Image (cartoon, rainbow, N blue to C red; front, side, top):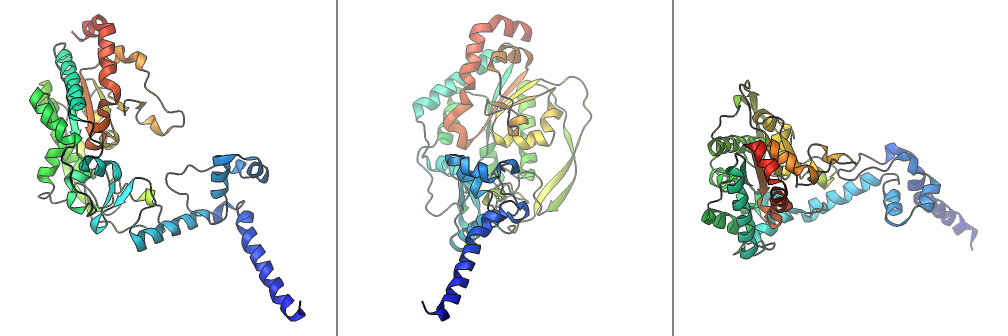
Length: 385
């Protein structure tokens, strides 16, 4: 090779070698990785050793390498940013970008389109089970109430992707219609939100959130309280509205679909209302409650609403784990063997579900409660009487 060409080739080879090895060298410099990614648990630094990388296996090894190389998080955020800005595509699982940059989750769109419709027979069978339990528990002084939480796809369908069309048969439509036929005591917050979403001065759903806004949550809480008071013939401790604050800062779940996007820069937020509420003094006894629900109840719990209404309330998240310990690696799973004792102690049981979760109505709680009553009827109802 001509000596005049050897030098540039060697320089080019050296640069290429540096580029290839630099990320591996920087893997031991945590500051170069960038801000941690939302939703991806970091791997402890003690595992980021050459030996662990060499001896690692399969998926764990691949994830370890991806989270260790220098600039890894910056690269992921850049990739997501380009996808979002250029193609209006989300790299986050389940997130769908609708018109005018409104974010949705795919399960809510599937329900709206009827893709997850379970069939009229299953809907009727589930509601018959619920109605029998509701009547049986009511006769012994325990109120079992159904609450249908709202869904963004139904409340704001005008911003769904243009390809989305409402299905002829959906779980929500069937559950609400058959529940009325059977006389199920139920609060339909979905219908309520649909009736007020246009006239409200502040958004019930934000552009970049999937749960109700804090403002929408307080609307729902007020309606839910009046429903419980009416059905249980009681007066519950309430909250006093002090004043409203307006902000574009995420204070609860108001922009909760943005963090999973893992973008380079924060998205512009519309100004939302955050009511300042003051709990009123608790006088007299309060009902004891078990709430079996999905993530819509997070904000009711986090704002202290359930603890204001009820005496030592329990929140069983998806009828599986005990909130707020669901983020613990050793999550507090519900011990169903204690269900007879729990029923014996409660005055109110709330089953709260959004429309997207109607495909798995009750998360098996109906069957478990019925079995518990069949097995321990005398012990449960003796105490409730």
